[in-house]
Picture (cartoon, rainbow, N blue to C red):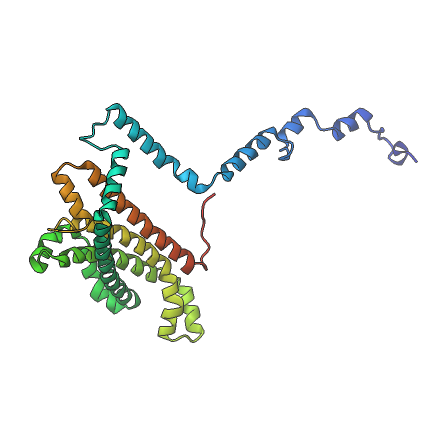
Length: 306
C-alpha cells in the first residue's frame, strides 16, 4: 500500500522538499557552533596557550625587574641619569660586594633581623592575646576593642618622641615601635577571623557535646587561622617599615645606620644597597608565611588563578 492510498486526498511528498529538509542550508551550517577540531580559530589559539604554559612561571616573573635594570643601566651609561642623583646598577653591585667582603653589610643585617624578630615576637603575642580576649568574649570585646581601636587611629610613627622620652635612645624604643605596628595588624585580622567563623559550625560543635575549650580549639581557632596568616603577612611588612623609622633613633649599627651615614656623604649606591636588602628580607619573610599557609591551610581549597 502506498502513501497516497493509505491517506486519501494527500499527494505524495515532493522529493525536492525532502532533499531541502534533510540537507542543511549554508545559513544553518554557519549558525551551528563547530567542533573545536573543525574550527580554525580554536586551532590557532590552543598552541599559543601551550607555548605560554611551557614558559616557567619564575622566568615570566623576572621579565619586569630585568627590563627595569636594563633601562636603568642604559640611562646611567648614556648620562641621562647622573650618578649624583642615582648610581648605576653596576656601581651598586660593586658597592654591595665591597660591603659584604668587609663584613659591614652582614653585621648590619644581623642587627636589624634581631630587632625585627624581638619586636615581632612581643607585638605578635600582645596582638593575639588581645584578639582572643576580645573575639571569644562579649565582655572582653567591651573592655578591649574600643581601647585598641582608639589607639590604632593614632599614627604609630608619631609616638617616637614619647618612646624616646620613656625608653631612652637605646634598643628599647626601636623594638617598641616595631611591636606597636605589629600588634594592631594581628589584632584586627585575628579578631575578624574569630568573629567570621560560621555560626552553624559553632552550633554543630555544641550539638556534638564539645566543651567551651573544645569548641574554641576544634572550631573557632582553625576557622580564624586564615585571618591570622593574613595578619602575619601585614605584620611582617609593617615590622620592616617600623624598623626603617626605628633605626633613625640614634642607631650605631644596623641597616638604618648605614643609610644615615650614606646620606651624610651622598652615597646613593649604599642607600640603594640597603633598600634592596630591606626588600629582599621582606620577600623572604613573605615566602616563609606563604609556606606556612600551604602547610597549615591544606584543608581549605582556594583559587590559584588561570
